[in-house]
Length: 245
Length: 155
Image (cartoon, rainbow over all chains, first blue to last red; front, side, top):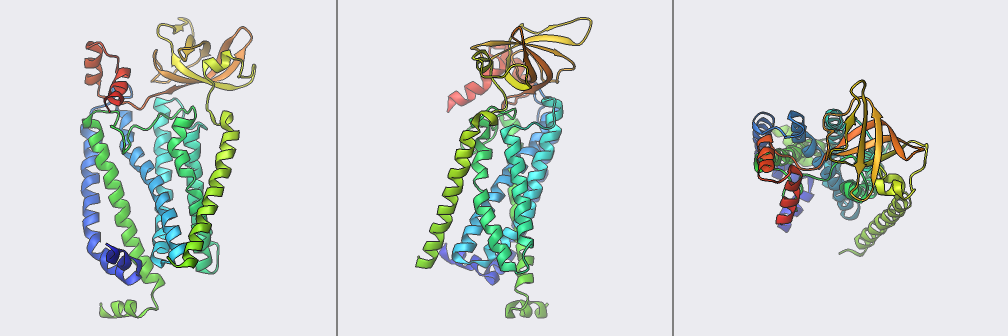
């Protein structure tokens, strides 16, 4: 276990280990999202009140899950980078942030599209929607802060601090629907409770959620490998690798 | 652990807890503003301002919706099962608006104790089910709203 963690901590070790892992994660992501997507959009039964518009859940919920999980991932990577000075953690954080921002936007956008037929409005300043918008701004802030310094290390450190402080927003998003009156309904789907829908509706949703996570992991592995090659381009092993091909 | 790393970890944890306390206190101070709507009970207690735009929310009371046959005027009662609030509205209602369903209405309290709404939004719960299941539940004497209670009670 510790050996694997140590290997992941060094750029070269991460590069070789992720090469073995990558094809499997990509395959899992493609398979799960294909099955989950087709099942959810074509075969799952329509909701008794919302009809077919409820199918937006199969994109909205996985995107919202990822938007929050990636932010927690950024904060963890930031602590690892600041305390243990593991460069790979910072490289992973730098490639995860834009994807997280994209997922946050997808969650907000699909929510707005869903809100028009069901709620009668596409936006309302309730606690859940507002805290999710703040999450998008935090992501944009992290991306901007990273690019704002001439010296890359300063940018990494500033972005790390913002990621750590911004993680306070995550429990606020999660519990906003319980702490305050909101238009957004409480969670349908959580790890600890049975979903408030029958199996033929939540099984495709589960596939989509797991598929989205696999997609995120696969993309992060791939882009971190590129980032490693870019940042370590003066290192011996990278030169040997390039020359060998 | 290396003492320098330990110190750094402590600084980060301290920073995080200070920020959490600051955000927590701010949200606690703003708690009434963060709530999206007033409940009928709060309005009955006089917590909501008169003649100013506010939002109210609750369930549409069964058998309380009466439509004007000549125009789009509609009158219904919003309840939190403690107090009732009479709402008057003129316009198109969202698809999910129905009796027994949650709503949030935007508008203001008027003299005479009724709520003049300028916008009606439907609030839906976290329970989803196919139409056949909902029909079957209805037949066996459960309302679809009981389903979520049943599921949660089963844990």
